[in-house]
Length: 151
Image (tube, rainbow, N blue to C red):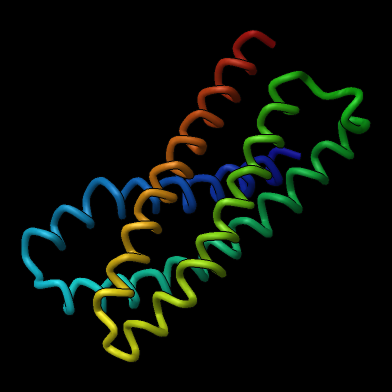
């Protein structure tokens, strides 16, 4: 069970840590150095790589999380913070799926077609939704840590 929890935690670190890095470190650096078309091309390349890792992380998180709940006897037997973690995690997954399918896919097409205005508008939407998901991810981590401390 410890290995399963470690795999679960590593998936969280990849997803939430990647969002933190992209939002707090990479984004300001890109704005400082690159002009809009180069920025948009770079983001397209970054998202293509990062989103593959997020899909893997989401799959591992859901699989390991539901299996851990099963090992504890089901939702009726897990602590309240696990219910909160699952709810927040499912909300994050829904936000991510929206970002990927409704924002990133058309963003990538606009970048490929050099439709910079449209791509820029979608990048702004992605940025806001990443901020929402980053906040939810950090909140989820806080809920788990505090929930575990209260036992």
